[in-house]
Image 1 (cartoon, rainbow, N blue to C red):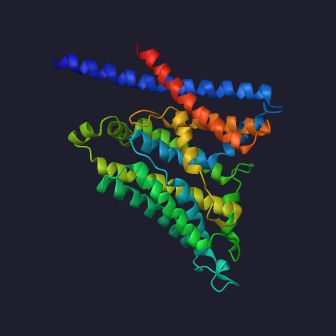
Image 2 (cartoon, rainbow, N blue to C red):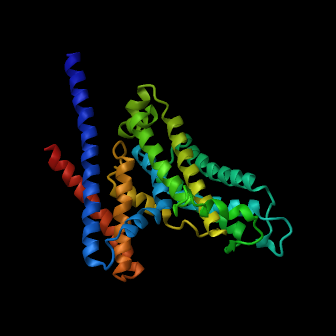
Image 3 (cartoon, rainbow, N blue to C red):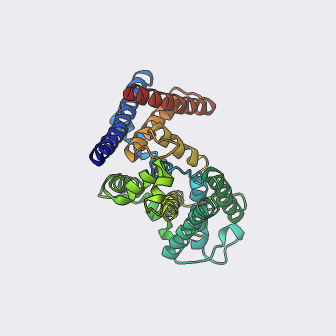
Length: 341
């Protein structure tokens, strides 16, 4: 009897893994097909540089998508990442600006640059800790909590910038991180950060117990808790991880543009959610992969880039994004249903 149960569990686990690989290959195939269709419809679209631009121009959203993916797999949302991007960027500028500027927007705390970066990252982690507190301790739905903290983070950024931006009286080294070229190439540090983050996330997801725990909690949180897994602690780590990524993204963007802007990162939280859903992440939790999220980002980048090449208005681009998500979820559900019959 016990042998039969173990065999069934093993069969189910193998089937689960194969389902994830199946959806990932499906998303990758869709991304490839869309790229080929866009190459036919849009002049000069099928070029090596354009292929690279689809990834490098979206490094920020892909990076945010890593944290959002892990939380979605665990059965939770994080809509605060866009606000954290704005907050961390504004804080890094404010902390680094010299004391005694010509006006309020050019006057900061005059901290050393490295300390300003740590302070900005600390502000990002504080929002992540606030998310975890309300979700884990008070059991408030994560979509409500993170929507609220998104507005809190952006609101603080707007107060510090007085609804404008801070871009003067900065130290010379402030713009180094965002524009630093690595390995003697044209590849910038933010793109390397994204690539390293993807590889780390894939390793955690596939090879580490932390990744397996995330799937177990998302698939059945009650069973996970009864098995001795500390769900609250694990979800807290996930929120801190996601907020740390958003904090680094905000710091790198503020360094690249050498300014702290309260509207930076606007709607990035929704783009990060969209690419995760396009990549086959289940909203209910327990299913999905970082690789799938990456191909979801390629789909969104192809759709957006092709729409721009066809000179469609931004309004139509929003409609295309919505249609892409709707069709992707329907197609993935249909494909899994057919496969499991």
